[in-house]
Structures are given as C-alpha cells and as structure tokens.
Image (cartoon, rainbow, N blue to C red; front, side, top):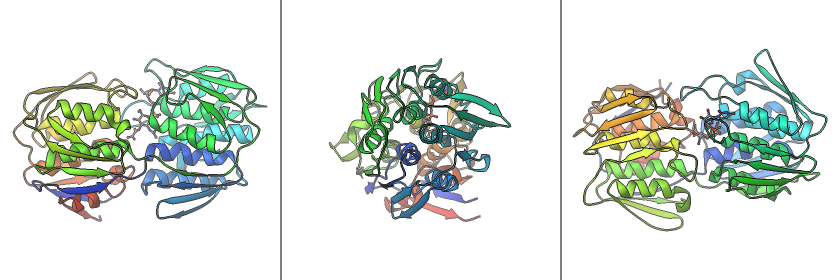
Length: 420
Ligand code: EPU
C-alpha cells in the first residue's frame, strides 16, 4: 500500500490538464455490453476504478484493448455473471445489471456491500428494473435478475434521499433495447448521465431529455459500435480549483475543462473570495482581496456536488470565520474531518453537518485516507500544512484521480510517493 509524503508550504503555479471523467467512463464502459460490435472510448482515465470495470467486462467475456487513454471493447460473446471478487471492489459495478438484462434477459451480479461514505442501497435500481419487467431474487449475496422481455413503462427514480445517478443510468441502459417507450421521471441530471445518453444515442438508441428530470427512451431492436470521447472530470477539475485556492498566490490554470459543469463550484469559490476567469475549456483561479468562510449544502446536480464536499472542508479548515458544510446525499461522508482534526483543524461534526472554525494553519500529522474524496481532501490540507504529512492508504486516491500526485508536483508541490 503506497503512502504519500507531502511537504507543505510549496506555492503552486502553472497549468494542469484535466483527465476524462471517471464517473462518466464507468457506466459508458458498462454500456459496451449492449452491442456485439467494437466500441472505441477515448480519454478514459487510467485509475483503478476504470481498471476494475474493464476486468469485469473481460470476466464477462468481452475483449478489451487499452492504449494511452483509449479503450476498445468488443463484447461479441458474453456471459451474464459478475462475481463477488470483482464486484466487491467497486460499487459502480452494479451498472452492468441494466445492459446484461437488456441484451441477455438475465444477469447475476453480486450485491455490493457497505461503503465507508454511508449505506448505499440499490433498491431504486431494482424497483426500476422490476418496473420494466425483471424478476429479482437475492440468493447467496447475489442478485439474480431475469425477464422474458423488457417492456417500456414510466419509472420514478425518486427515493427518500432524492434521485440516483447510477440508478438512472441502469434504467436507461435497460430501456434502450426494451419494447416500447420508457419514461424516467425524477431522473438524475448529472453531466455524466448526459454523456452516457449521448454514447447510447451514438450506438443507435433513441433517448431524449437527458440532463432534465424526465428522460424518454424509445426502445430499438439493436445497437451498434461507436467512437466516443468521455467528458472532462468535473470533480478532478473542482479539486484542482481548490488546490489553486489553497496553495497558490500567483494562480493556476486548468486546461480541458467544461466550465458549464462547474458552475456551483465556481460560484462557491467566488463567494469564498477567489477570482476565477476563463470560459469554455480553460479556467484560472487566483486569490482575491480576502478569503471568507461559506455555508454549503450538497445537492444533486446542478446543486453543489457531494463529491466536492470533502475538498471544501479542507479549504475552510484554514479560512477565517465559521463555515457550515452539510451533506444531504451522504450524511456520513465526513471521515476526512476526523483526520483533519488530527492536523489541528477545528471542526464539530453533528448529524451530517460539519461546523468548521478556520484556524491560522494546519500542522503535519500521519493521516489515513478513508475514501476517494476524503483522500483528496487530506492531500489538499497537507499542501498547506506546516511540516511533512504522511498519508497512508492512498490506494483510495488512485481509484479516481489520474496521477494526482504527479500533476501536483508538476505545479510545484513537494510530494513523494513511497511504495510500501
Ligand atoms: N440511493 C438509494 N437507493 C438506491 C440508490 C441510491 O436510497 O437504489 C441513495 C443513496 O444512498 C444516496 C443517494 O441515493 O443517499 C444518491 O446516491 P446515487 O445513487 O446517486 O449515487 P451513485 O449513483 O451510487 C454516483 C457517483 C458517486 C456520487 C453520487 C452522488 C459514480 C460511479 N458514482 O454514485 O461518486 O457521490 O453519484 O452524486 O458515478 C465518487 O466519485 O467519489 C463518488 C462516490
């Protein structure tokens, strides 16, 4: 298990290129199971989660080639069983359910287990697939799904915590080859859902309304191969904006971003006192006249993303004043705060809310990454802390950030990776 040693206090400057989106790549890779033809997917980030998904596809029988960011998948002959050894490594593996059911009319997928960011049920995925005609049984920790055929219907994606991103993806992928028209009400509007819909439409699907809460899928008989470039990773971009906010007096520039996907993050950083310039594909962040604490509540897109909550906690830990950060999507996703307290942060946690009183500086301490975004937050905190912070369990960060330590080093950070 690698460790990162981060020597705090370096000033970041220069530019960084943002990778393709992990969370768009995962369902898109699963969607390649919907056709026998070859699919070419460009700008797939080289992170552990995309590698796990490719292993699942290979295990199902697909042929996979990967060279410098481009992945080619040919799922000519495939089976229907995704085993526990692979599924347990990544929750997003549940998004093979929709395509397998759609193409083979059966799927056996291990039920994903618990997750450190909170209970992550799949009831809404299953309710939607049942609505389209699937029978679902749970046996030996596996979900067994089968149907004679899938039939279009109106499916409501809303549960007690709101809508679901991968659930919306699963229903879209199941519905593309179903008989008749499926209407997904209360659909997730995330850019990653839109990217999947664009991918499916290029394959010959008939989907309209992606990006709104009402998606209409008209079933087609067959899908074909496709060449697609994944959208930029808005969470990686947001993380680098926070790095620039925390550790750069001259400012840093992000290249290959989609500004429109970052509106809520940009507005919040502007409210917190930073200047952000640029339109389209490039953004520059610089310090403004003064930094101020803010209140954030995470919400489904276009609201403030839960996947940026931890990074904002790192920023507010050393921002003058009191900031209040509330996560309504994953109220238990605050492990990073307990670790940052070990670095001297002043944070009270209560019921899905962190009350952060900004301190003058953080101090290096050995800390442990607990999940992907928590590890990004610790890395950000360590960039400005006094001394050398040792971050262990960095495999969490490698799940979703492509070479983040190298990208930060290229911007001027002093980080060593210890292979342990
Ligand atoms: N939920 C249910 N039932 C379900 C599904 C979800 O109650 O059947 C609840 C969840 O417990 C949660 C809320 O609905 O409270 C939203 O969860 P959602 O299903 O939208 O999450 P997801 O689709 O499993 C994706 C991202 C996450 C991101 C969330 C929310 C991928 C691969 N994952 O997960 O990304 O936090 O949407 O935006 O796209 C990350 O990248 O670090 C990450 C965790």
